[in-house]
Amino acid sequence: MFVEKLAPEQEHAFDVVIVGGGMVGLTAALGFVKLGLSVAVVEAHKLSLSDVPETPSFDSRSTALSYGSRQILEQLGVWSAMADLVSPISSVHVSQKGSIGLNRISAAEMNRPELGYVAPNQVIGASLLAALANHSLTLLSECQVESYQCGEISSSIRVKHVDSVFELNAKLLVIADGSRSKTAALVGIDYSVESYHQYAVIANVTFQQDHAGVAYERFTKRGPLALLPLKGRHMSLVWTVAEDDIEWYQESTDEEFLSRLQLVFGDRLGRLERVGSRVSYPLKLVQANELYRRGVVVLGNAAHSLHPVAGQGFNLALRGIARVLEGVAIAREKNLEISSPKLLANAVDAHKKDQKITVGLSDQLVKKFSHTSPLLGLLRDVGMVGLNNTALPKQMFTRQTMGQATRQVPLSRYFDEHSQSGGA
Ligand SMILES: Cc1cc2nc3c(=O)[nH]c(=O)nc-3n(C[C@H](O)[C@H](O)[C@H](O)COP(=O)(O)OP(=O)(O)OC[C@H]3O[C@@H](n4cnc5c(N)ncnc54)[C@H](O)[C@@H]3O)c2cc1C
Image (cartoon, rainbow, N blue to C red; front, top):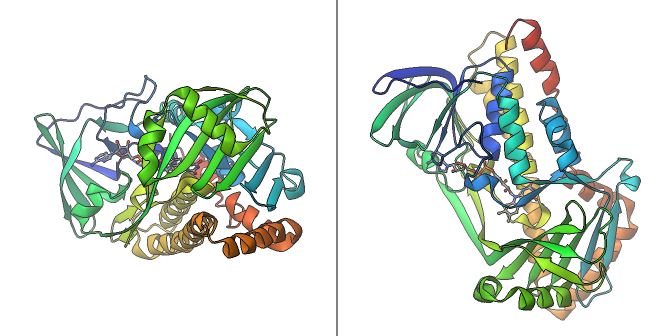
């Protein structure tokens, strides 16, 4: 990969300009360069190709990846670099504090080697950058988009870096700069925002016993908590807590924190031994009112930022990226503009349907299981037991969260066709 030094105050033309070099922006960039397109990525924070990424997307969190996401990352050629560094999920154990309801979903009953994987975000970032290193890409880091102009067949953005300004022209502008995107606002796209009045507290914890690849989802009166298996006896904790209580979770000592967590989670994995640094995120359901405008698509958190309870945000985003890449690949096969309105609008429509189902699932999970009415508690128990004993809804639920409910896009075919026709 080479990073060009662009001459300021001049217009530079690209097939695709992506605003946001987070998990979604870099994944999309890899897909587009593998299709043989010229790509520029504009990132607000410092992002170097040789260092471990330290942008907000690649912080100390870990991400649960579905089996379907693995298939997308395999086709993009990133998976092999990550495979030894991710932790497989052999089963998911769902329970509710003070309730008889219990669910177990195992890889064996889904006829899969694993249900999913847990990848530290830094591993995802480093693997994406390593894969991008084999291609030509223009990376403008520490840059802010100042303005946007929509042309007949392309979009132009003005980008500022310290005291230099660059004009970038794109046949396709991809907005991937995260929740309530500033770039979407420049384009005139609005958001609907619903606060959950909760925070997610994230930390790595160490148990006395081995987790054996089991991921835990535990619903409590105050909100759900998830423990995802990492290497060794370590687990990644996502603890959803009420807005009013957040101070305690941020300021309590490690001993106090561990002792509350032990009380809520129980002794399934023995004594909790250690907790790493804690980070918290306010939780909101944020959705862009439009995902497509002529020559512009919105992806990832910029399109949909959901509650992390079901670990679906990035998985959903990957399916969106795959659909948009397919739309662009088909447009090229038909000798159309890469931002062909019909093909991109079709791709985005399919993604919107997927988004509606995925958002609904995460949102209902939070609302249904956060309610404290005893009657609803009983119904919840019945529902949870029902899910365990009825093959159909459980399979449907699992297929959706495994990323297997929608058609797999044959990305490799488009990438292979491109490399056979002489591309990079
Ligand atoms: C606590 C928590 C746990 C989660 N767990 C899971 C999980 O287990 N599984 C899952 O699938 N998903 C999970 N998610 C969701 C997942 O993190 C998101 O889907 C993912 O981070 C989206 O990536 P993104 O690149 O779209 O956005 P971001 O990660 O927000 O990245 C946006 C990028 O754009 C840059 N940027 C911002 N503004 C500008 C600008 N104006 N110009 C240029 N660049 C800009 C930022 O610096 C950043 O690099 C979780 C989320 C949270 C909060």
